[in-house]
Image 1 (cartoon, rainbow, N blue to C red):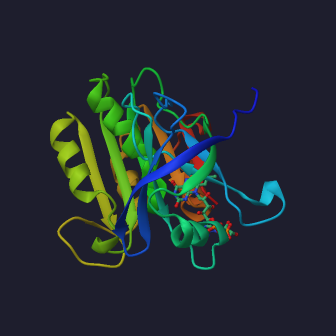
Image 2 (image 1 turned 45 degrees about the vertical axis):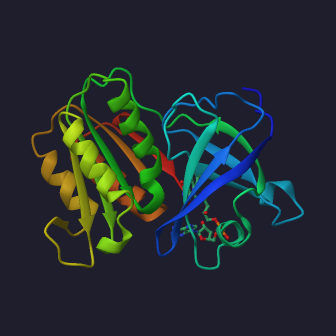
Amino acid sequence: MALQPWRKGIITRIENETHNTKRYWIQVPELETFDFKPGQFVTLDLPIHEKPNKRSRSYSIASWPDGSNVFELVIVQMEGGTGSTYIFNEWKVNSEILFRGAQGVFVLPVPLDKDLFLICTGTGIAPFRSMLHHINDHNIAHRDIYLIFGTRTRSNLLYYDEFKNLAEKIPDFHYLPTLSREEWEGKKGYVHQIYEELIQKKQPAAFMLCGWKDMIDEARRRIVEMGYDRKSIHLELYG
Ligand SMILES: Cc1cc2nc3c(=O)[nH]c(=O)nc-3n(C[C@H](O)[C@H](O)[C@H](O)COP(=O)(O)OP(=O)(O)OC[C@H]3O[C@@H](n4cnc5c(N)ncnc54)[C@H](O)[C@@H]3O)c2cc1C
C-alpha cells in the first residue's frame, strides 16, 4: 500500500489525564472529516533528530470516527523518552504538528461472533476506547466483551468514569480495571489472573493485546498455553 501523505495537524486542546499522561486533541484543517478505523494509529514526525527514521513516533487514536476533522491522542511521558518529552514540553494549544495516517490493522474482528478480550496496560487502552465507543454508537452486535486494564494505582486509571459509564450502556460489556499496587474495591493483581479465570471454560474467543512488550509476551504465552490458537491473538506492540 502506498504511504499516506504527511498532513498538518493543529493542537486544539490539551488536558492532564494523570500525573504523567496527557490527552491531546488534533484538528486536521485540510480535511472536512478525518476518517479511520477504530484501533488504527498515526505516526508523528517530531523535530527530535536529523534522520527522518529517528524522528517518527506512533500513537494509537484514542477517539472514534465521529465525522469531524479532530482526533485525540493519549500519551504517557516516558522517563528519558525523547519523543514523549518533546511532546510534553513543546506542544501547546495552536502548535502545528506533522503526522501521517491513519495506519494499521489492529482493528475489530468482523463479525464479533466470539467473546472478545481487550487486554492492556497504561496508554494501551487508547485503541480499545475507540473500538468501544464505535460499538456503542453503531449498536454493533457482539458477544461478551471484557476490557481488562492493568495499572498500579487508582490515580493511574485512564478514562475511569467514562468506561464505567460505557459499561452501563453497552450490553455484555465488562469493564475490569485491575490494580497491582493499591487496595481498592475492584480487581487486584495483574491482568493475567483476570483473563485466565474468565477463559477456564475455553469458550470461543478473540484476544486483542495492546501495550508494552513484557505484558504482551506474557499474555500471548499464557493464552496459547490455555489451548487457544495463535491466530486468535491480535497484538499492538508499543515498544
Ligand atoms: C502502533 C503504536 C502505537 C502507540 N500508541 C501509543 C499511545 O497511544 N500512547 C503512548 O503513550 N505511546 C504509544 N506508543 C509508544 C510511542 O510510539 C513511543 O514509543 C513512546 O511515546 C516512547 O517514545 P519516546 O521517544 O518518548 O521514548 P524513546 O526515547 O524512543 O524510548 C526510550 C526506550 O524506552 C522503551 N520504552 C518506551 N516506552 C516504554 C514503556 N512504557 N515501558 C517500557 N519501555 C518503554 C523504548 O522501547 C526505548 O527503548 C505506540 C507505539 C506504537 C508502535
